[in-house]
Image (cartoon, rainbow, N blue to C red; front, side, top):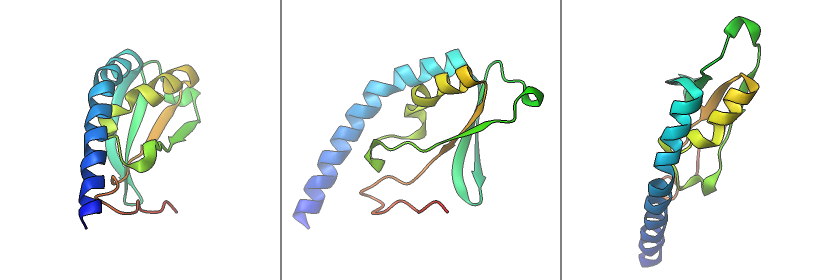
Length: 113
């Protein structure tokens, strides 16, 4: 039990550092590339949909689905805009970003069907 508590403390410290190092860059990319980010659910799965600034729906039939990894324990959604915002802008596509619960507080992320 003490090993689990120690592991959790280490992961929380790493998570805090990751989040501190990514939040400013993430916000800058969001402002530069995205028109909106919408929180919603698809089939009960929490997602957010990012729309690039120059997106024209009738001209585009593509949607990118983004599964981020980061060991499933470090980031929160506001820390990942830099990872997909530029992709959304350069492909002129909406990006559906799949959210998930963080480990180790949640031992296993829910499987996506």
